[in-house]
Image (cartoon, rainbow, N blue to C red; front, top):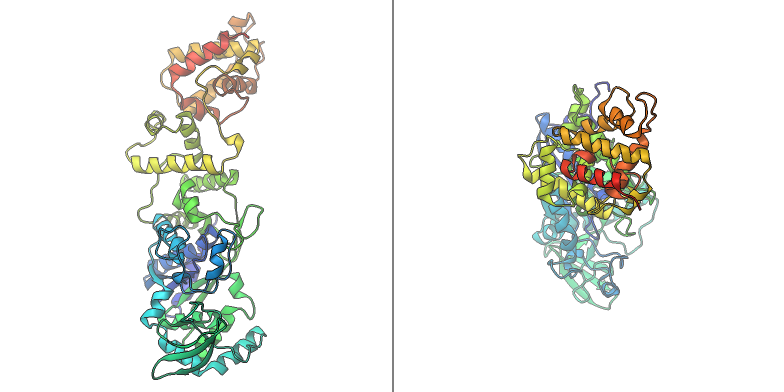
Length: 530
């Protein structure tokens, strides 16, 4: 591949034209399972941040959890008891499982753990805490004073006319606790309070400090100034003409006197053939689940290999193996170009494990060992891999085990039979002779690698090989005149060990099993008659 500049470095170069000091921000509303579609935003922000640091910028990376947003509806994953909480801020709603301090923390905490596993370490802010601490108070005052100017901006850019009673601030009802059913009646800038009426019948006064929140189209630009954001990725839904970034740019400039952040617009991650991932529709693979089945550096690679403006199609079944293969081939390049080297560099992060064992090979090792980690380690050592970092090997083995349980297609699974499968009765004389001769050669051989086993099977059709000669002698045929179909010999191996006609890559598979076991099994199969 020609040496080209990675998109993160292109972003960094553009951002640095605006100055050397930057704050990269990302934020997600924890209203449901935070999925790998959301991960695109966070990884995009992280690699942009890292690219800025690499170019000598004074950069910070922050994550804002929109915990003060209201619950919009009873999502498919909630029970109907949550109907009474619709409209309340997520931070003020009970946890669905009862183990977290709020609804928002129920979804946010596993996401933050996942970020640690991905080597992503932003400073985390929770919107409810920022509002309650008064970070937004000045922005709320300005928005209330300039309500008509904001309404005019929204109408001009979005084409929608705000209602006569529209307000940029949504008070939190003292009675029902909802934030989307109130209307502003008046406010006192000196006392920093807002008067409201609520559809529940309540009337009252709330402080600007924690007593409500700005509407989204005002909250976002207000946040940029309050937190000093200079770079932010966001989904294409916000980037449409008249969308929240368009109105946000105008509001932050004209109302708050602040320059909008450099935008990084990203496309969706599509889940197989099911469409764009969405917490509200349930079309998701959570980041937590994904980290159970694939190394974190591969998930990072999934995001960084594709320019943000292009969509990503992700399938955790068989195509996941293709993704891992692609990543591992990148690592194995003898002379990677600067672009490939940068991809590898950005895929890695401090604290991430890495082993030299291919994911596909571990799927064979894991199943050959029946999931037993000590047996896995024995096979790994026998295969010649570095065994010093047990922790990383254990992580990979766990990934593979979870993938086999959760997403692997049936054809990728196998189980070594403890007893000779009854299917061995179907073996032909040629296949029995092959297995018997194969076993005899194994008796006299040393430890064989996967490649050795692979070549040994194919040598059955080579007149110059020992295996071919042994088979010919056993069958009373002349060496060189006997035709052997290697595919039938592979079938004989799989039938005798797995009870099925196909299986994993034979070389890796055979090298994962004890040689003495193979000798016994092949001899049993060769002599078996129904």
